[in-house]
Length: 160
Image: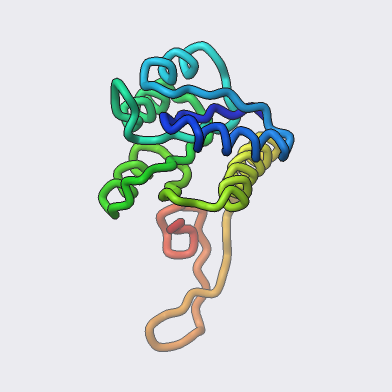
């Protein structure tokens, strides 16, 4: 599996690469906004670690560009910016996880594994066609009625 580590702190980036390489990942590094944009546009990755504060630009702009081009790469934001607003914004734009610094490398590795596992599952299990569902429906007074529907917006078919 091929990973891109976008992190301007070279020592941290090198430590991440050393750990993940020992977990049998192929890792590439980008230390600036421009380097990251170039690599994202030229190569395909299975997962990307993205710092938000980069020399030359903001990591969220890279994420916006990735999602605008419908790139399915898994993205984990790793950032010292730990406010709730930053986390929500990154996840809204399209990150899979937001991991505040400092973090444990074992947790990072498991989050990467989870993203890759989910992508492989989705690739091997195409979406199923909706079926008619018949399930007991809980009315306000009794448990005596049954609702059958194939509408995704009906109470029994509604997805939360």
